[in-house]
Image (cartoon, rainbow, N blue to C red; front, side, top):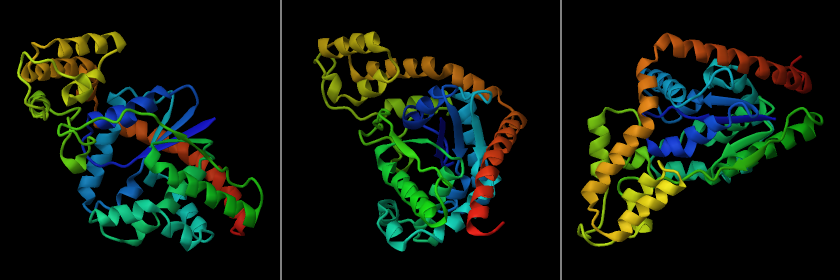
Length: 318
């Protein structure tokens, strides 16, 4: 079985990225054939600074390696290194009904958020379909908010096969991820757009400042506190096993634990959990990262070329 997942390079990763994306995808390595794509072509819909894009995708590559990505057990690559993505996206756009894209909720949502309503943003689902279909991906792990994009990819694959022949493109299945939803320091979902994140690889002072800024209620030190209602506990519990969670919950419920001390405990747990990753990242050299991406992109391109040969033959370009 071949599994494909992708992520846009959008800046420094935070705790929510780790538990919502990095951890679950790295845990899949080796069990199946895994392709992890850094979606730099998609980033062009919203990112218009070329130096920033180059920096973000290089740094994201480091983040993957620091978090445990093993190049011998999976394929990490840049989307733009595989020109077949853009070629297939054009061919697919010629069989995709306008109505299918007009029903895509992501375009409307992003425009409402103030993003430029460009053609790339509107046709984003077609390129995303090409990303999936070009690798004959059987499964695409996604969050619930991405389900429609995989459904669109399936619809496009079926329409293409109906027009040009059976089994040219593989219609993928979505695998809905039950990844943890990590609260930000203000209680909303942790997100760069909200400015409420705890950075993974920033210096210790920046991490501590973010943790000490977590919003709490006005309960005093001696008052019992409900772990389920406390953002500090909710974030801390992500770093613990089941027995550790229960033990920490008892401390909150018993009273005598002030929020200041609770935040210090969280900071210590954070540093213990991520110290090996932070140390590994600090030792990574750009040349090592480039070598991993180059080799991964070669592997991905080999798969993509095989699919494109079938597609070109089917549509009359061979």
